[in-house]
Amino acid sequence: MSAFKKVAGLTGMKDTLPPESAQWESLEALVRDWLAAYGYQNMRTPILEQTRLFARGIGEVTDIVEKEMYSFVDPLNDERLTMRPEFTAGIVRSAIEHNFLYDRPRRIYAMGPVFRHERPQRGRYRQFHQIDVEALGFSGPDVDAELILMLARLWRLMGLDDIRLELNSLGQAAERAAHRAALIAHLEKHMDVLDEEARRRMHVNPLRVLDTKNPAMQDMANSAPRLFDFLGEESLAHYQGLCARLDDAGISYTLNPRLVRGLDYYNLTVFEWVTDRLGAQGTVCGGGRYDGLIELLGGKPAPAVGFAIGMERLLDLWTQQAEVAPAAECQVYLIHQGDAEQRCAARLAESLRDAGLRVLVHAGSAGFKSQFRRADASGAMAAVILGADELSNSAASVKWLRADDSGSAQQETVAFGQLADYLKQRI
Ligand code: ATP
Ligand code: MG
Image 1: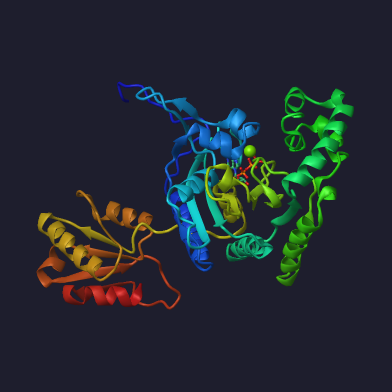
Image 2: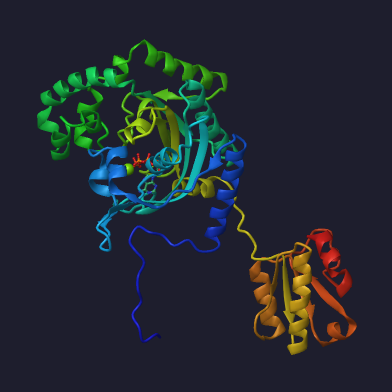
């Protein structure tokens, strides 16, 4: 018992310990290879940004900005700061600041924690992680299609088979304005079912009202005029250009005219990948085109399109559907008895590491039996034993811990000089 009180971690912010942390590392490695196959490069931006970046970039009248941001005034210099609730605004800020698009468009990704003050539940946390992918400076539906094809490949690589794709087009500003008038008229006709938030938002950001999760408002939302029906020729051509490429690739999708996404900056293409395997939080990935954002944040106008994947939800799905083997702590575990033997084991371990093996040396002294138990728990393939006999013969005993079917000898004596080669051949 400690004389001191424990300090608890924060609600909705998870610790990730081994062996689960190894699954995260496997996922991150797989994701980096997948992104490299499409030429996406990593960008790292700060977790903290000025609050006004998100207010302007995401939109004042959105769930994120109105009620989910971790914002505070830095008491040391009175700056208003926010822990990033998403990546796009920071990436765009950075691209503008570094004139990153001056000579060519760029394919960028980022991975890491984001923060939203939400009610924690399965698939919804206050610190969660996103894989964020942005194609900056590309205007055509070919790149929208590329992003969706990439995602289909990721699901394939991970062995995930029931994530479905929903698509919509939010058109351009003029089309949204025409739709907006019709939508406000519709909302006014249904004032009786609108909740307080909807009433507040209906004149500022009526499209956002349709994004409601309030069951009492679903009928009203379903019967609302559809933005899709207000699209002009060019917007429709963009949408059809995307669909044609998805058809070429054999990717199925459904048009969901209700899909508006929780951020203000989208135009034309928006999409979500949804599954029934995650309970209420079934959206694994959301994205779309945001041709106006770079200009809105003070940059030279340039089109862009991107998406974000929720890593907790993706990992949840992955561990449900595929066998994600826990990684072993090491390949070889060194067991020893006696001071000279320990020092010899430490030297031997370094030479095995020189040969590229992952090695643990038992720390401290303990009986052979308890050291073997520890070796077993480490997941090592082999235990290397150094006792007095081994030391005097300059040869180690090797015990193979994972019995194989061939019935080959489970324990052998190997000269120190041959040990690295011997182990490398068998591991
Ligand atoms: P939701 O409708 O579930 O709140 P969202 O539209 O707010 O999602 P985005 O801003 O599009 O989500 O973020 C991209 C992805 O990040 C989501 O599709 C989801 O997988 C994940 N995500 C969003 N919020 C959370 C959260 N609080 N905890 C864990 N993952 C989240
Ligand atoms: Mg949300």
